[in-house]
Length: 141
Length: 141
Length: 141
Image 1 (cartoon, rainbow over the protein chains, first blue to last red):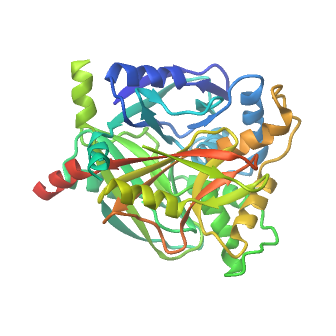
Image 2: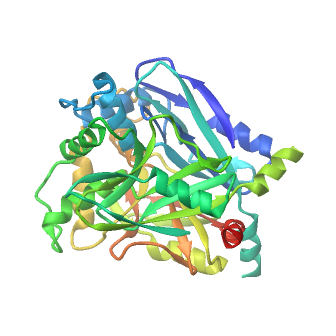
């Protein structure tokens, strides 16, 4: 498991993690398996999507429209309640296949850290699990 | 894999699974790896978030606002159609890293079972995968 | 890891992947572990839910209602911007436990490929990770 420390720039932000996650796989020299990306916060999330040409601003605006700002009960810090809801709905975890030492992603598909209460430094954990045991079974199958 | 049987208390409810999932890791004596949490229902979901101080009621109210109650086609049981939609949108699966024998979570981050059609007894499966193979490779790298 | 090539039939569509994913597990002869399902596209997603009796049409209509069609900035192809947003919100990845050689799913729970910009041929990757190492540890615990 490796910890990535990501500095976000805005109150709501999208950061492309693809190259950072790929570098963890390269360092581990893992060829085949699964890569887990997990954000240990309640006001940030991870997903995949196209980045660039305004797509990330569209995404953040859609999330703003989709999740209403109701009268929140949350006593601890009402100003962050919306960010908590958005993070729980988008989710903290992503599991991506690794093949030939690389993340298996589509042409326009990037790993996105979604900042919902920034700017802050965020912790993202990358865990790798090799697939050898199953590969051997497949070979015998 | 271990099965957790969770009794929910309300039509819509949030149950904190963090300690129950942690106890499965302790029992398995797994130090490093991944923990998968999966709910085998179509009207319940799992995610992470802050629990307490009204946050879970805020979350359930936000989901109610976010997902409209349209005229559903679902013939089998129209009254449950909204619950099905909400569960598919929030998702049934979560993958959390494990380090030094503990779930890697943020300070305010709990594992949440989201009940959308309760009260009921729900089945949540916790699966553990050790990371040793990759850890060894990293050591050689 | 195995690649499933899925032909979707409509602009928005839901395809039941359950049997195809189960056949990958059968071929690999894996008994216990985790199955990762990942779609390598930015306008399609995976989740689980009930399929049949109009449920999938309800789901697609709910997603249409939930995610507003705002004035998108996305320059590359504005007509696809909504599909990008919906795919990032629903998410590309799913991790399902495997026990006794079968996916662990609820009675009405199917693995759903959600097409948001079809009809197209979509790539879905199925990766298997055996759980033996942890199972042994549990035995010793």
